[in-house]
Length: 134
Image (cartoon, rainbow, N blue to C red; front, side, top):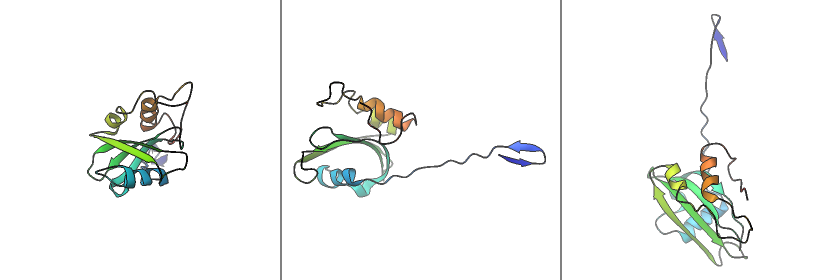
């Protein structure tokens, strides 16, 4: 708070976090996606992390074109570089892209995660970035 002449004014600072692709997203984008690479990604907005040979990774990203994309991918037990896969769909907003994610993932878990809800919650600031709730 900044007070001048006995009147107080609040100064708000907008902090924008820029996240670059981590190893998992970089590998998936550069090797498993047709049409975009990790260099096309200017910000990673939300992520539900995966697990080799078990759970896919899910990301919401902003592209250089101004579009947003929902990207998903995974790999076998040996990690990226042996048997891996990925795909993406583009949308005009981050929330629209997140709505493309599945509600329930195909997994070994008894109570699979709601990927769509987790990505939307991260975008709205209601869930920490990169947290997987099962």
